[in-house]
Image 1 (cartoon, rainbow, N blue to C red):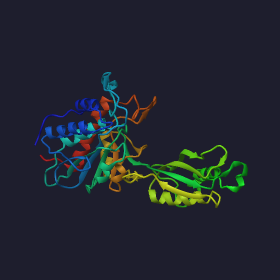
Image 2 (tube, rainbow, N blue to C red):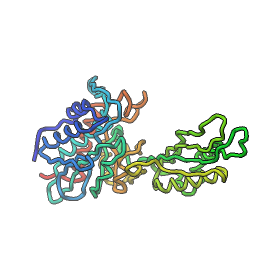
Image 3 (cartoon, rainbow, N blue to C red):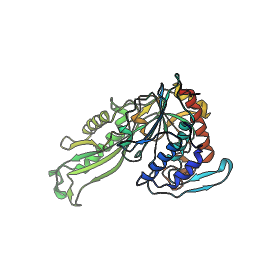
Image 4 (cartoon, rainbow, N blue to C red):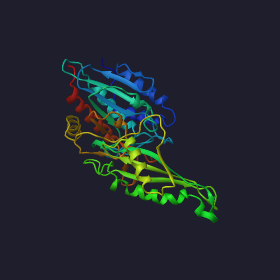
Length: 369
């Protein structure tokens, strides 16, 4: 069933004006209204995901992105003309611009013949925080296209992100009799050495990945001690891990704790715990750059293939072949774009992304008619 004509830039114009940094209700209402104007049923599941499908065949292709944005809201502006025309405002590139492109492809391609595949639109509500929506999805699809700002490149891999805190425990004593205590802050010297050497010497740690390169481990927060004249009994160090396949969060936790244990005095207690969260950490993913999904979308976009530089909900869909794609960039020559006060997307890129998704989907799933 056909509905109103859909213009991705007109949709983006409306979407960027809708605040979705604290509550996605209004943005989700706009999305559902937009889908249903096309004569397609849309549902919202218990996790807040907006879902719609077309066709029943194979392959089953999922179009996924998110409607939440980071704080603070940045107001809408539109300026320039031609290739220089941009839409500014929160969510313009992360990820309402990619959403507009995915919607254009979803509406334009109508699988339904005996040899056609299936399309599912699966839009999540909380990618910027806990990803409870994406974690709840159980679609069993064959292929996934995840909308994020990639500058129209097709991204086939991304590092994961884990976070945790190393806790060192000693024994308080008067600083004048420091030998009678166990100094947890002093033990941080060994813990920091363990962090620096982790990927060089730990057998469990992956060295490099053919698409993503080397993993990284960075200490980000350190605290310890309570009084200036007391041997401190406690010290904590928070670390940020950017992982590459096949490392999992649990493997990392066990290996790092053992490595730190080997670098601090025996009388210092060592515990490393991953930060509590309701959903699993976003682990690294990778898709074969020669897969049909990659080649089809890259040919349609006329752009290159590369890794994505940020963690994404694509993690939850792998190992099914998954790519990240969309208009806009995370950063440009002048600095950060996504999550920044200057967030913008080029109108020409939104249209180009919409055309590329449409062309790729027609090739992948076919079209009734």
